[in-house]
Image (cartoon, rainbow, N blue to C red; front, side, top):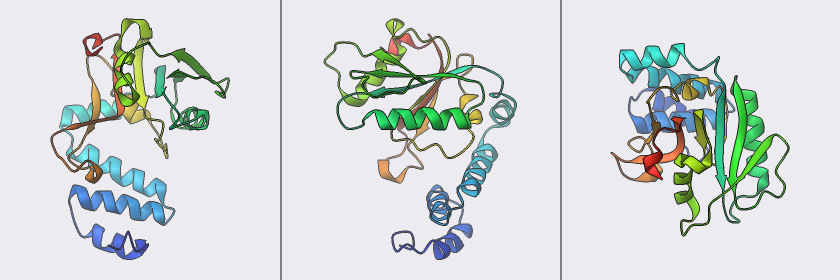
Length: 204
């Protein structure tokens, strides 16, 4: 209620006294409303690392800063224009050391900046988010560590720990348990994905 009422100070006080995915979500929202994005990111990563199994925590903390990684996105239809792609490319360059390039799979490359490599989407009956599956095909021609981000993603800080998950045979994506907008637990959300191509070609 405090978040909706634009009372972030009160929301922050309540959320700091609670320990649950919902409280963490609202804590982040309150901090962003107060202009304290860096603090929100720090607290979230501390929670993720604190809850992670020891081996996964050590792996995340020790990897991700010295490898070239390809960032990819999908732009289809008219919902998102080239502005979203260009902003995503620039923000990833600022926040991801070792980024090789941003590859945009699209049906319309008009307006894309030079820092974006445009590749065509296939001719298929698939539409919208289902076209993400094409990223795992042999013809997508992706190799090595890959980080996928939805076009409405706002990058606020360092991406290296997420990028570190794109290694070996690991496939990483989001779970829905702590995402209130999903209204379900035990599922997956593909807004962010990390893997090493060309693994998982069976998805396509």
